[in-house]
Picture (cartoon, rainbow, N blue to C red):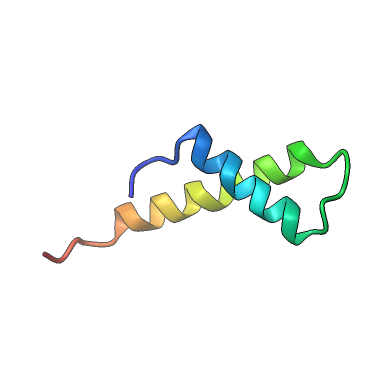
Length: 52
């Protein structure tokens, strides 16, 4: 998996927002949380050797 796209981040942020009960005024928090999650996942995937 490569670096997440902005659309990947937006989709994940929306999922997190829904799971949290759709609170108002927290869009930036969910965006940054999603960005961190996806970047961490991408970095861990880059560290693991690929088996084909």
